[in-house]
Amino acid sequence: MIHGIDWNRMWTEEMEKSSWKKRRGDMTEFWDKRARRFNQSVKDDDRPARILSKLDVDPECSVLDIGAGPGTLTIPLAKIVKHVTVVEPSSGMLAYLDKNAANEGLKNITCINKEWEDVYPGEDLDEYDIVIASYSLSMLDMAKALSKMDTVAKRSVYLFTFAGDRMWDYTDLWPKLYGEEYRAGPDYIYLYNILYQIGILADVEISTTEHKQRFSNLEDAVEQWKENLGISTPEAEKVIQAHLTAKLIKENGSLWSKNTMRSVSICWRK
Ligand SMILES: C[S@@+](CC[C@H](N)C(=O)[O-])C[C@H]1O[C@@H](n2cnc3c(N)ncnc32)[C@H](O)[C@@H]1O
Image (cartoon, rainbow, N blue to C red; front, side, top):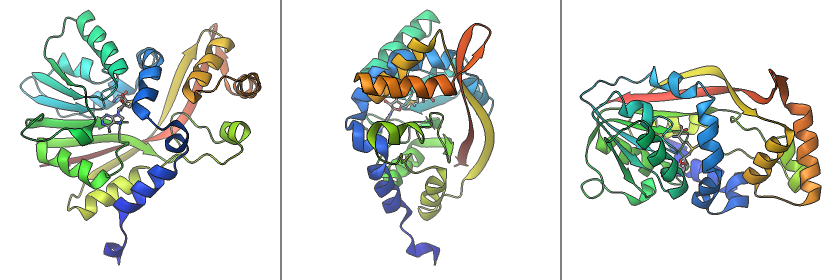
């Protein structure tokens, strides 16, 4: 019965129907624009440390980090492993990764400025002890993307993603701005089932975590939301301001956005 369900096709359909995909088109351009603030937000977050504590790494191993962003995991990993290879399509994100690596004096990172779909084992890719994709699973053909990860992994593959709501929840705001329901896109349950259908029985761990981001004031927060949404009309600004006034929390002279989410780690060993 389960074999009659095409989880990969359902993943592609849900991705295509997701609000971001429909509104934003080119996601690399989207990440280029978000790079500066994303780099900053990672520094206030305990997510990188939480993820690192789950990885089975040692000083001799090689790591592949897919969709590394500004080096959220690459930078701390490069301090403890032999070499990290990054596949990251956003040159804006890579510019921050380079800067972060230079600040730490790290010279064991290689970057490939491409999408995961456009790199090939034996050409751009070698084999790696550990393969990681953290909050970067936006490929449309997920079965193909996951099979490629499995092909280049020698020891283990780790995926980090969401169950249900994302770290940024637009459920309330989206209809006010665009007059349509917000659709977040597919979550971990699709990934787990796609893996099952390509013959990989993965371990799954779900935990409740808090995602928080600090803003110096309300204007700063409004600017970020406008930037994220790519929207700048005075009407939209009013809607965003009202939304954030109700949502942000004041603490120690700063404003905080705090969201509880269900974080998922999916891991399989070779
Ligand atoms: C939310 S950020 C996550 C960054 C980092 N891994 C982390 O955990 O903070 C998503 C990143 O995935 C990258 N990305 C999106 N689609 C990708 C693809 N098809 N192949 C490789 N990277 C991709 C984006 O450019 C972006 O830098």
